[in-house]
Image (tube, rainbow, N blue to C red):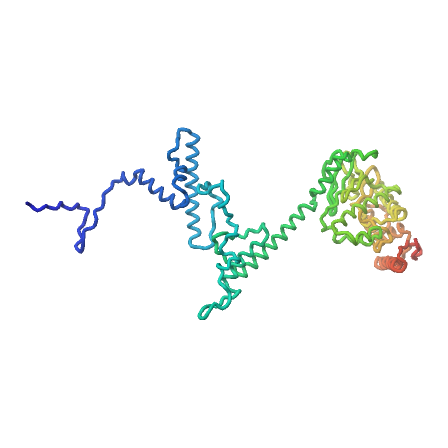
Amino acid sequence: MEPAVAAPSPPWIEKCPWGASPLARTPCSLTEVMSEELAKELQQQEENAVFPHVSGIDKAILIGEGTETSSDLLLAQMLQMEFDREYDAQLRREEIKLNGDSKVSISFENYRMVHPYEDSESSEDEVDWQDTRHDPYKPDKPSTNPKRGFAGKGKEITTKHDEVTCGRRNTARMENFAPEFQVGDGIGMDLKLSNRVFNELKQHSYSEQRRSARIHEKKEHSTSDQAVDSKTRLLLYKMVNSGLLESINGCISTGKESVVFHANGGSLGDKMVPAECAIKVFKTTLNEFKNRDKYIKDDYRFKDRFSKLNPRKIIRMWAEKEMHNLTRMQKVGISCPSVVLLKKHILVMSFIGQDHVAAPKLKDVQLSNEDMKQAYHQALHMMQQLYTECNLVHADLSAYNMLWHMGKIWLIDVSQSVEPTHPHGLEFLFRDCRNVSQFFQKAGVMDAMSERELFNAVSSLDITADNEGDFLAEIEALEKINEDHVQRHGKRVEYDSDESPVDD
């Protein structure tokens, strides 16, 4: 028998001179490499890496295996699902790339398009990532933190100041922060915060709480330049619904302390409301009232109530004070708005103007020499009436608070007006006289008196002084006499022309 002759080795197999020949490599063509089976196998490996928790059945549903695809809608849904799955796979790769081996990692979970391995029907096994009830690193689990104290010979001593113990305890204490402050701790995250980081986060949380409270306070309880808060709007709606006002048309003017709106009047029971009304809404912000309490806290009509009210209710007292002053002025015939209704910090008055157009301020109106002279004498007469008959001092009288309507002057804005016996009443009167005198002198009125002459003409006091400093010194002396009399007798006095106090 002839010995078997070994078949010649293929040319691609090289013989190894030091050992056994290597295994033969099975040749494959390019067609087999690009075959659909190999592509599916690679795709399956990628899916297992991206979605390790997805079962085979769920994957078949995702891919659409064994599903009827004759419907265009179903085919479109399958294509969209495939696109979303590829998008989530890309997110997963980016997430792994960014996180690396870091213990504190970021998650793109909120940006995922589909969640094939989550069951929305069952909520027993669902755990919020911020829920730390089952967190193994909570301090109430003694097994997670090393025991403190001496553990035996040759072992380290663990105290309450241990870095790991403090870090985990600080992480758990972050649960006591404000609900709006996202702490970012969750299950499976062994997050440890140093004392310095924890204290900075705590201080930041308190700062955010105070800032949020300030924003809420300003939004809910304050008025802006041409807007009102929700409570003020409710009061205005009630006035319209009750028939007191037919409509509220818009803002007329804004000031430091109030906003004035125009409205069409209705009826108040048997009393007819003017056809056109002005609604004065006192701003409920306290910034402009901090330096103006001297006008009301020393006014004996409101002094007892002023000390018992909180700052926000004092603003309502301003509206009440203007109502009383306007009523007192109207009784003696001074041209001023008539009061219709007072509701908290909203004062409804008659409108000085016509056809929704407010009367111009004396500062802005252009008058002839004769009309300006007539306006000066009207202002002088009104100041005398206000002082002698109403027993009031305007305390903020100027060309900005005098309107020119129907050929005469109208006084407005009397919320700060006080009585002459006020501790600073005569000083306020002298300031009003200076504003009025300077305005009409600049307007070219030849008969306009100086501020000292006008002060004596209005108050009937014969104060003789060569300069303004001595004049003010005598005014302060009179006010001091009045205050001393109040402290001794408990009642105020009236100023007589001989500069001596006279009992009421």
